[in-house]
Image (tube, rainbow, N blue to C red; front, side, top):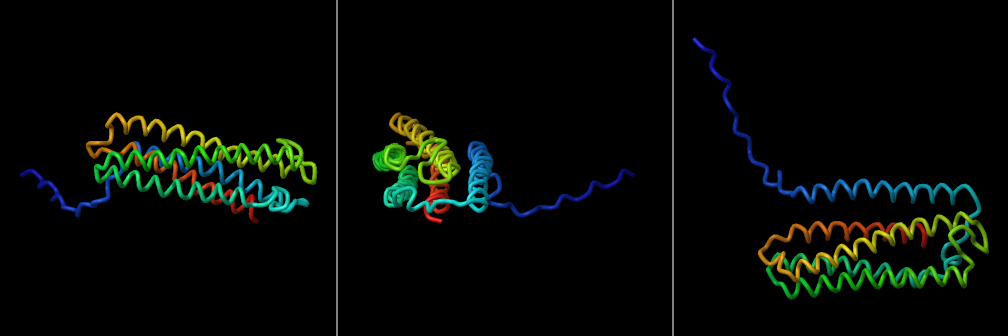
Length: 205
């Protein structure tokens, strides 16, 4: 007589299991590795400033009013990104496009202000990529390395959102499939969060 097969047990279904699309999982993996890169830069910055005389960032950078405005812009652009995705969920195409355009303008304005800040620091404060006229040269090089690396992410994110805007105009998200827009939103929220950390560690502390 043949052996009886073991009974199969019915396990409760996890409603969250398998909910994330492959593109979202891929973006989360990328953001995790990218976060390690920023962590390395900020940790190196902290070690350097703790082992040698370091200028007061507020004085060396001529105040934090401009960088504070840049922070406010990115936070607002993160909110507008949420509003754009929410409009896509509700199949409100015009609102989705408008909020997405606001997000793009926020990123472009941030980049413009960063270019202005770099120009001011180089011409008025004596800072270049490798020298600083009023103190520690490593302050200058680490400042431009960290903020420049983040600025590259903002540029990439803005171009990414412009591509999403073109797709939205072509009706890609009209049928309720807004996964690509959510993936772009994940990247943009990451860029905003990293800037808050950069602003805190480089400009304020």
